[in-house]
Length: 249
Image 1 (cartoon, rainbow, N blue to C red):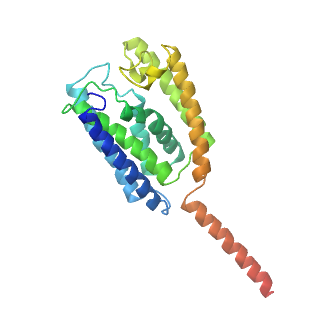
Image 2 (cartoon, rainbow, N blue to C red):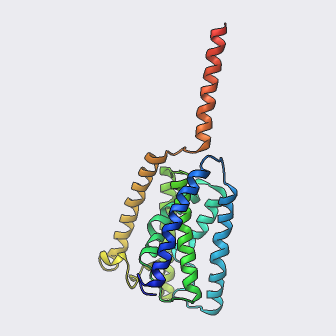
């Protein structure tokens, strides 16, 4: 697939429409306490849209260099499914950090050799678009800001993935996560040669996630949402009752 050719521009246009929809729907659903039917439907839609294409790829187009689900994006859709179904903080944080820094790189500068109508083309775009939309819906729409402990857990989880995937790459002579070689064309071209670009990428991602955590907390708060609102209203009601009782006495 040619970057910024017709088969790249069409998913990009769809991506923009989906971003707007994710924000608007998230804001509308933010008044509901807990996962909505829409959120859980999307949680089921992600594996329904990604798993069949991956199974076809494994069964009919197997290539150890690209087919195994070892890229971080292959874990991101699992985190997004978990996050949309439960709204638990840890998978929400993983979806937010992975989706809006790493997965989105694949949307803007995809490293994809296949084009229409290859199954890998559909699998690639289904996975990347749905993960990024989920991240935007959960954090920007529903305002579920990650806490610093969620930031730390996401960093630790990502480092475990990086070490494990690097070991597999060395043993199998593959390049999952682009930990041994840069992809054909990507933002990694702005960094130094191996292994320095890996260290630089880790440092940049760490700083970016820290800034994203700080920005999300300031914009949405760590306890934003209906539960916080109801808690404040309940506290006000109790204070009013207490004052009313004292005034009557």
